[in-house]
Amino acid sequence: MKLRPSFPLLLLPVLFIFSCTIANKNSGEEPAAVSMVPAVSDTAVTEQGIDAIPETDAVFIEWNLADDELVRQYFIYRAVESAETFTKIAVLPYDCTCYEDSDVGLYTRYFYYVTAVSADGFESGPSDTVNYRLVKKATGLSLVPESDPARPGFTWLDPNDPTEGGYILRLVDAASGDHLWLTAIQSSYGHGIETVIYNADGNAVYDSLLSGREYQWRVDITPSTSFSGSESQWATFTIQ
Image 1 (tube, one colour):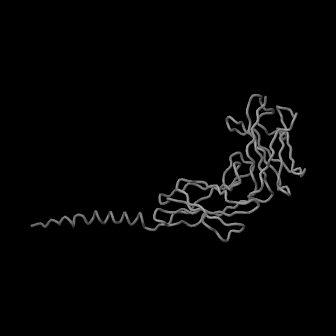
Image 2: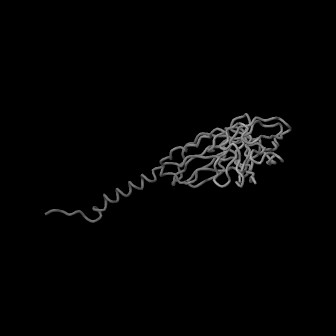
Image 3: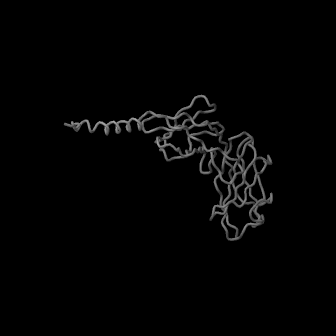
């Protein structure tokens, strides 16, 4: 006579497979380290990586979305003035890829790294460390009175003392957001007041600006020290 296994014995393989699955999902495996988005040149049309922002005095950092199903959160760490003592300053959900640190001061260098955290609390090693130093934003953005409307003069004030360095002027079509002119300008050291005529370098998309169109422009201050600067708020004008 053949003996049939009892019901509990029939469940053993299923229970074994289920328990193995649970063990694998909560095995304490550490997520892969986060990959930071590299910063680009100050003159790049598409901005990315660690940078200043126009809206406020804040440091913007950016990383690539984790390609790891274990990741449920990111921890943001920061150190002040040297990359020695880091403190966790933020916890973000797994689908975030950037962070704006507004709890910062001017002329101070901040260092950052990001870690990935799994559902069961295991933390990856640190990402590459990035750093940035904010300076004062350019102010008083305006068009030079009585300049040619089709080729206006742009003027602004650099409030940093001493002047921090050069500038990047960005001019975009307000409707489309397309860059029409992006030019690097050396400081004139004229008591902080700077002026440049549209298309002075011949690199603008159009020789002259078109009437009836709305334009936006801003000025980035670019000190000689790496990973340092500011971005003014956008100013708007229309050629009549």
